[in-house]
Image: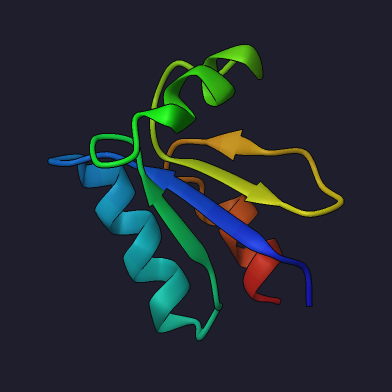
Length: 76
């Protein structure tokens, strides 16, 4: 299974919905909250992301926002 990293922030409804989707579909992921771990903000900006959540899956194009179509592909 590919490693999945979720970059989230506080008070973000799309972040909460993405986490809920992954959890309900038994998808294991590592979470980095950019409010608590600000070192990831520059990393995401360098990759062109300006909004959370960002879902990064090894071997695939990372995406941002609550994207059920993309999440379904991950959950299989």
